Image 1 (cartoon, rainbow, N blue to C red):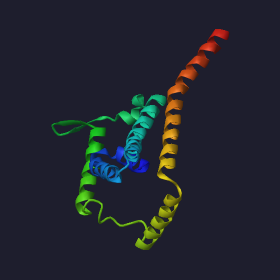
Image 2 (tube, helix red, strand yellow):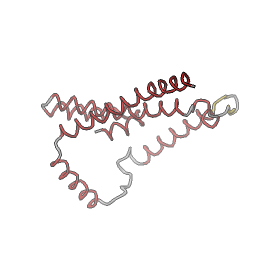
Image 3 (cartoon, rainbow, N blue to C red):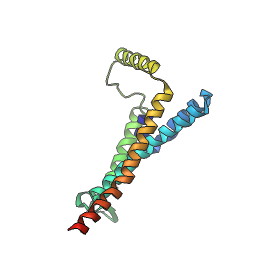
Length: 168
């Protein structure tokens, strides 16, 4: 679920069907705690990539990098920005791919059907051994630890700098 949330967090325009599926699984399971945990992990998968991008943006001051700002482009009477143009072209190519391949249903698979089925069986056996609650609990503890580290690390760095200035 975390991986699904991460993928659809980056490609948010089509998150609706996946969110509907997660909601259906959560509702049909009959266990409200498991359903809540599934939705929480899905939400984390959507939010964590955005938080990582924001942290990298601040850490490396990417807003001031010239190669990310782009340049003004003029196409006849239109005044565009190179990033708008690149985004527009990307979405047109994506739309054409969806039309050509009936969404993603007609895209070729990187592995054969038999190989895919064998992988599915192996992962199902692993899933039978590990309980859902243990996996979700581990993921929740890991997410909380990472969040705490991200929130506390800047404060600790700032406190260390203050001491070195006072002693120097």
